[in-house]
Image (tube, rainbow, N blue to C red; front, side, top):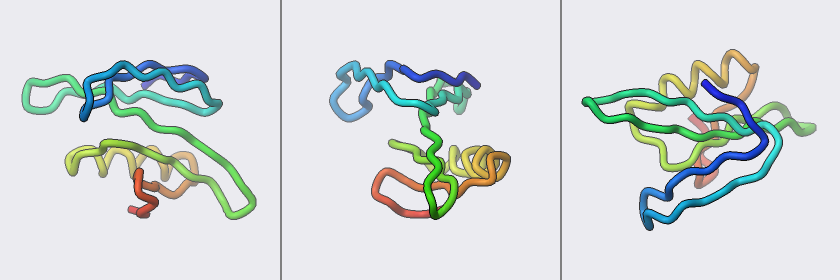
Length: 84
């Protein structure tokens, strides 16, 4: 796992390279079905608690993201605001 304040990822829907600059960014790199996946997430704190936000997540990735959120005492939130 890598933490950074700036990450570059390829949008899986448009194949365009995106650069995101924000404090609390992370990348979890894993292999599933012989294919490498880069899962990006961000960690935020506010008055209501701690949150891990992920985008373009697949079902196989959710358990690991829940584990990361749990380790950070955070709630896992998807790109449409859904909590896992």
